[in-house]
Image (cartoon, rainbow, N blue to C red):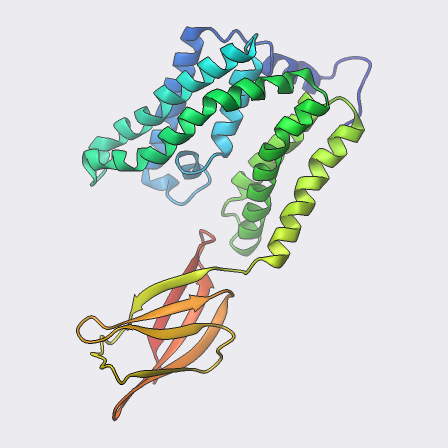
Length: 300
């Protein structure tokens, strides 16, 4: 997978062209920004892409890492890389929201979500300045790539887990992120002693994090399904306290409970409020998108 060849293979010719052989003029940068913005907006607007790997293009970073590295690697100097990458994001990100405005029930309020992307746009200037040095293809390149490799590794491991449980959901994301890791190691490092730690160190770090962190982190309020009006004397008892914690969050009209859990599973709980007893089943489960959900149902 990582062996060098005396004659350039098709893959090497392809990567040489993609990462250094393209003319990244200002017109090309603007066209690139507009094109990726339109494509992203389509994925966000068209219902068929809802919840898919393609919709993630407007939510997560993996596609934009791919675009940014193409842009950086085709600039001649670090300052050019910083300026053009900054302008690319300055055009593409607000344009994505602008295209969505006529199709969204939020209208212009949709731009309230742009704040996070604007902060990242500002950060692209210093990141792209430093990032340009990956083209040197040495140990410094690997060091600069390390955060990106870790992020992409975390993404592909998580996506493969989701695909395993809800195939084929996020399988495209998993393969795309894994492909980027392999592509960047192939393109921007020279020796196998750079490539191997570049692949296995982030993978080992992600696995350790997955082993030590909780399965889920649920900590939120929920209404009860039969809308009981609880009093201050209400007391909650959970059948298996290791699976979840349930406490009274609010009494009176719109009574609520607070659910805290760090693992998937089901348990039962009851609320005693004077002479009244309410019994429920609590489920912490993963939906098809890989997100933890809470379900409370009355227990007969």
